[in-house]
Amino acid sequence: MNTPPDNLSEVLRRWRVKPPAAPNFRHTVWQRIGSPAGVSWAAYLRVHTAAWSLAAVLALGTAGYAGSVMAQARVRADREAIVVTYLVDLDPRVQALLKP
Amino acid sequence: MKYLLGTLAVLVFVAAATGFICYRLSCDSALHAAAAKGDAMEWLRTDFHLDDRQFAEIKKLHAAYAPSCAEHCRLIQEATKARDAVRSTGESDPVAAERKLQELRTTCETAISAHVRKVAALMSPVDGRRYLALVLPKIANFDHQMAPDLILKGTP
Image 1 (cartoon, each protein chain N blue to C red):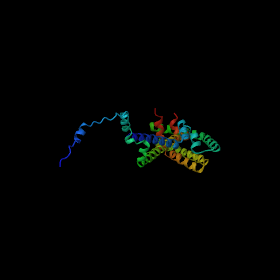
Image 2 (tube, each protein chain N blue to C red):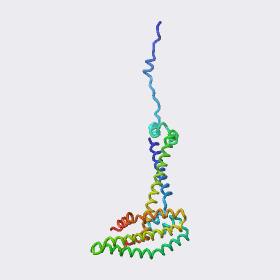
Image 3 (cartoon, chains in turn green, orange):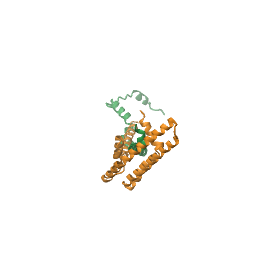
Image 4 (cartoon, chains in turn blue, red):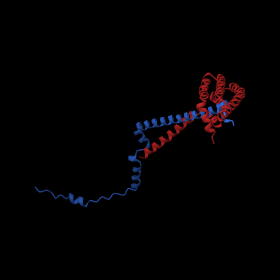
């Protein structure tokens, strides 16, 4: 049995695709680079909620604690200074040292 | 990466703000102002929650104590000079001069302790205890603590 002449190769050889140029190709590429897979910030946070929540709790707790500790240290230093000032006025032994 | 850095920056900013707010809330601005001005009476008034009547009575008590404080001061200075003279000349007993000075200091410590107890009695019981816990150890440890501090501060 004779096969019909296969002209597919010939057709493919002559086939040319001329797609129209996309007008926003460059802009679209940069947009996709800037926003990976088109994800918004809110969507990013939703995806990483657990990690960022833990980080927020730790950071805020540490910052709050550090602020309180620093304030208490300052209160102690202020009180120490003013007690000495108070006793300078009150204690003759101190005044005897200070007076010429 | 952009969102990671952005979220991190926001978190750092919020943490810094939280730390600052906690610092401000835990600070005692009245105490700091009194310490900065060296205003011990203002410190007493604010730190020990004195009302006008208590404050007036404590001021009166301090005023009444001032002459005896000045007299003690004069006696201690005289005894110190006498001891130093004895030490330099070596004519009389330096131990006796030192003992007299220590006796005067002890008398003075007893007087000032009694005075601060009277002051504490005019405060509320809680504030009075806190006041005594602050001042009595410093009065008792004068030789070890107060005097060197003052000498250092007075040194140019």
